[in-house]
Image (cartoon, rainbow, N blue to C red):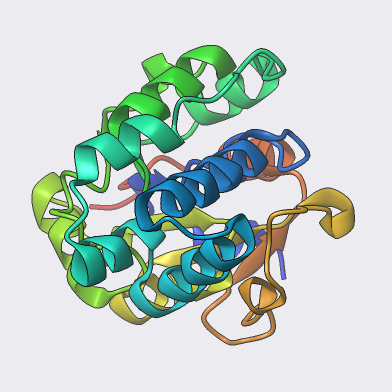
Length: 239
């Protein structure tokens, strides 16, 4: 089925950030992952291997490692976010093709990330796409309730006045699309070309065959070009 058949009514386009708006082969997430491990190792005075185990356990159980650290250890989130997002963006190049594809989409565009707004803004600026987004909804705006919980999505929808049945969600993790799909959003899973993300656990790839994933693409810019080229503006032809 053509992706166009699902997008006629969409007037809000919601994008995850990491490994979604930039190609997954870049090492940004690997850097973030390593910095989280180091932070937990120093915080708890444990070996990096044990810190990594705790990091991934909290991530799976609580939605983010930060949420687990806040609940289990009373970690102050601002310091954690500043530390883990202090990454080198040198290898991240501007993407004029992606910028043009996003600009051509009818309606508003939003970034919804479990990371920080500062990190998101830095990445969007480096990609040359920051001007095309009306807002960034980060983990602070979510009051530290992370995807994939329904409470997190409801907070996002209320904060930006989004009607889920007129919205599309783009994510690199299938589990983060289950609630959006249930709420009525069109869901698109952005997968890495060749499936190479060194910092990923096997369970993070689960759910791709489930019904809550409407579309899968390895080429976000190409997918958006196809949608924007043929999809009518919301309300076009309606009386």
